[in-house]
Structures are given as C-alpha cells and as structure tokens.
Image 1: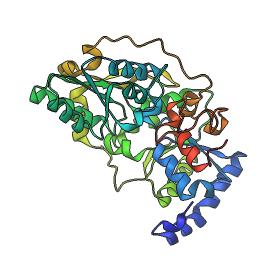
Image 2: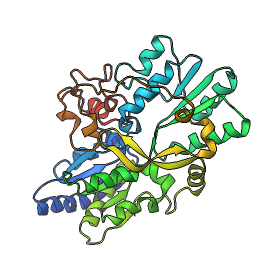
Image 3: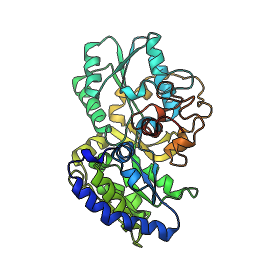
Image 4: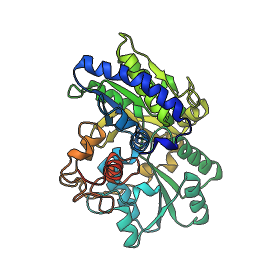
Length: 368
C-alpha cells in the first residue's frame, strides 16, 4: 500500500488531517461505520492499492457494487456465447476477461482448446478487421460492457453496415448502470448510506445521467481514482448525507461534464434500443440493457442465429450474484481462495480484473 508514490503527498496528508475527523464524527453519530458503495471495480482497486481504504477503515465500510460488466453478465448470456463458439464456420471475437468465465458446463477458453475459433481482441475495430479478412466465415463479437464500451461497439456496427459487411454480428449483453443502482436503493434489505459513482461511465452519461439516484434522494458523488479523489469523494458523500435534499455531486469535473458525451449518446440511441435485460444476481431489470435497433438487425446475433444452449446452472456455492449486489463480501464466500482462485475460477467475480473477488484475492493475500 504505497501512498508515497503519489506525486502530491502533502496535499493528501493535509486533506486527510482535515477530512477524516469529520468522516469519523459522522460514523460516531450513527453509532456504526458508514456503508458506502464503490460502484466501479476500478475504484475498488484504487482504494486497495493506494492505502486509502485502510485510512478510512475505522469509520467507513467500503462495499463493492455492480461495476464489473463481466461479473454482472447473466449466466444465460455466458451459455449462449459459448453455444455460438460451437457453430461451424464461426469466429468468436471477445475481450480477454470473458475467456475464463465459467458457463454451466464449460468456458470459451476450454472451447478454444477443444478447437473452436475464439480470438481475443482489444477493440471492436479488431473484430471488424477479422470479418473483413474472413468473408467466408461468420464473425460474432461478444458485446459486454456498460455505457463506457457500448459506443465503440455501436460504431463498429454502423461501420459494418456502411461497408456492407454481411458476416459481422454482435451479441449485445450491454448494461446500463443507473437501473442497477435504483434496484439496490429500492431493496429494503440494503442499508447503503451513499454511492461513489464510476467516473468512466459518467464521462458518457454526464452528471445528469444519474437523475434516477437524484430522484431517490441518494447521497452520491462521481469520483476519480487518485488518492485525493477517493478521500474527497468520501468526504463529499458525508456532506450530502447531512443534507435533507441531496444532489449527485460531480467530484470529477476535469473529466466529467454535466451533459456527458453527446456524440456517444447519439450513437447509442441510433444503433441500440433500451430493453429489459437479465443481470447476474439481480434477475431481469426493466430498461437496463441495450438491444440492437431494428435498423441494424442484420448485425444482431440474437436475431440472426437461433442456437439453444444447454440448461443453465450456476457453480454450486458461488456467491458472485450476492457480491455484485454488495450484499456479501468476497471474504464471506466459503469458496474464496480455496476452491475458487484466479487459476480455477468458479464465478466471473474471480475472473475479471474489475471483479471484487479477484481484487480481494490480490490485495488480501488470497485468503478469507
């Protein structure tokens, strides 16, 4: 845990001296630790590796939320993707985090080892290039992600249409972040005091994109990822807790604008439609996903290919669904660091670099 690497140590030390007592006083008033959800997996990493989590440990319980797109992808979607990989004449293009995610009976990694043509790409542009280079074969790009990655996928679909590529398909499992947080707020079993909102998603949707949380009067701050960002974000959540009427605070104005990225928003509206979609742990959430719009249906793998995957089942004992909702810590899972490790993951939370289990494994020494 190395705060010494941060270029402005003096500023952090000064803010810590002034802000932490205020945070501790709020916890003392409540008679318990503050329960704050860091929605983004990158925030979870930043809190752990910078030592800020330890600095606040006496008064703040940081709870990982549904900010890992691989982790919240429903098991039915994983099984469908694997079923596509078994189709003859098919190339699957996917981000690397998807390779080892366990399906009900196998994984994309195992299917590739068995002979399926599954290729890791770093952008949809690479998937398009594969389609151009293999006109006789079907190329399916597995679209997994939030508002951050969806625009680049939309751009690839629009480009494929302009070029007349008939062998490029996208399986859209994209998710919209605000509806998941609304579901958490409306769940009476949850006791969350506030949200640290993801900076990357907010670049696209803007501060105004969080109106759902604002309408629910939730303390929430959009935050960056440096130590000062993290500390100030927690402090500002506490400030919002003390107000009767809360606003979503933009604590990352050097990157996030009020209205967000209008060009990206327009592209999403052109290529996708908002749809109900299943989330791991949440079930089906209304208006929380992006389906490919009718004008681009020729590029929709779901519409073009009717492939039945095997019956879906979850790994016995895996608590990933509860972890992504913040109802359990990875350390509460009996499989964590034992039967389930990054080398032998039983759920996606141990696979993705943004998954809470893999992060806890890295920073908690791999033991519960």
